[in-house]
Image (cartoon, helix red, strand yellow):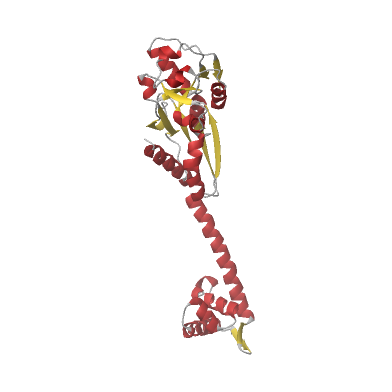
Length: 303
C-alpha cells in the first residue's frame, strides 16, 4: 500500500492521541467516542502490520512507527494550511496592489469614506494613491499605469470606461469679508471685475471655468495660475483673489469659517460632474473590483 492510500482520518486520530497522551483525552478533544478512535487505530495497525501505540503507566504514547506517521501528518497539515492560505490570497487577491488616482479636491472624501472600508476588507493589498490633473490621469490609465481614477471634468474622456456623477455647483471661493461673499450667487460678469485664481489648463476644473466664461463671451483673465488646489486655496484665504471649486473641495475651510463658497450663476457651473474612470479593456483583480464598487456606491449615494 502506498502512502497516498493510507486512511487520513485514522492517522489524524493517531496524531491527536500522541498530542493528548491518551485515547480518551483525544476523543474529548475531537468530540468523538473513544471506541471509534480505538477501532480505527486497531484497523490501521493491522493494515500496516506494525504497532502504533504502547502504554506507559497511565499514558499511551506512540511507537516509532506511530511517531513517523504522526509527524508526516503534522507536516502535511501545515503545508496544506499554508497552501490553502496562498490559494485564498490569490482567489481574493488579498496580496498585490491597486493603483488609484484621485483628482485634487476629492482626496479627503475618498480616503475617509471609501479607503477605510477597502483597507478593512483587503488589509494586505498595497494601495498606490496619487493625485493630479485630468489629462495626466487619462494618459496614465490609457498606458495601464493606473487601475482607476476619480476625476473632475466637463465630460468623461473618450476611450475610457467612465461613470459620471453630479458634483454640485462650481463656486467662487472667497474670504468672508470679500464683496462677493454676501451674494447668494455671483454672475460671470461680476467675477470679471475681480482678481481671479485659475488652475493649469490640463485640470478638469479649469476646462469648466473656460466653458463658463466662454458661454457668456467673457474672457477669463486670471491674476494667478496654480497647479495645486492647496495653492489656490491659500491665495484665496490670503484675500489675494477668487478661486473656483465645488463646495466639497473646500469643506473644512467652509466649516471653520475661513472661506465662503458662492455658486456661479451659470448653467454650466450648476451641472458640474465628477467621473470614475478605468480602462475599457483592463481586467480588474478582485481587490480592484471591490474598490471600484465602493467608489460607485459612494458617489451614487452622494447624488
